[in-house]
Image (cartoon, rainbow, N blue to C red; front, top):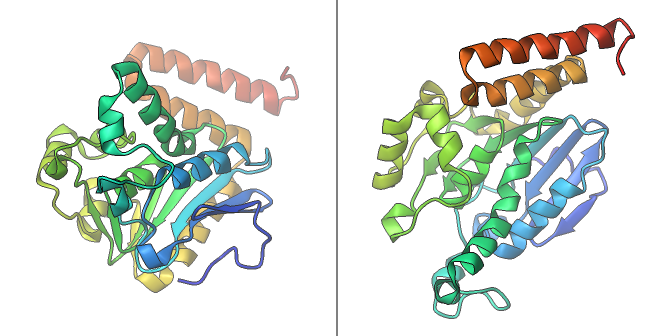
Amino acid sequence: MASPEQDLAPALDKDGVRLTVDDALATVTLTNPAKRNAQSPALWRALAEAGRSLPGSVRVVVLRGEGKSFSAGLDRQMFTPEGIPGEPTFIDLARRDDAGIDATIAEYQEAFTWWRRTDIVSIAAVQGHAIGAGFQLALGCDLRVVADDVQFAMRETSLGLVPDLTGTHPLVGLVGYARALEICVTGRFVGAEEAVSSGLASLAVPAGELDGAVRDLAAAVMAAPRDAVVETKALLRGALDRTYEEQRAAERAAQARRLRDLAGLGE
């Protein structure tokens, strides 16, 4: 795929992650296609840093991967006894107490959480393999547009582990408990057609049209007034945690803020 941000100076470019900003649009690119954008703790720290580095002007963040695969999951070196130099191995983690394991995984999860902030809309452009941590990274975004060759899979359970990089909550929300369970415990592939029909993806397009389709979606999001988008996202994100009456009240409060703002009476 051609790089839509190739003419922009990167605001961050390290450990397999590049962040570029073009006014209201930011693009985060996974930049290690030779390893199918395999993930490591260093990459997760860089992704978290990208989130902290976003200027206030950014309204939409596009997440993409260079090469044929979005991300094939964890760097296989993490599964070896030696692990990745300078990083804790799985055995090291297992030897820590509960608080130590919890703190380490919580740090890893930071790379997967900021995409759902209410002040931005995040869009994952997913082609080829999105496996394990790659699947969960795509699930971290608000929206997913996929190429017709996409192959999602959650392989953690097959390895004796669980998906722990924040993917379980959005997966259940998108496809329901039963299908989410079946996808996770079987580790099977989910292709483009099923991704769209099940709600995992908004749109599937030929691989060569993926960048263009994502740019069109980003432009459509940015066409609406920013504050209205922020309020709407917050309403929808909180809807499942509220009762029907609580959601009605939240809608009224949000609309009051919008009306006052449009009338020039906001705080």
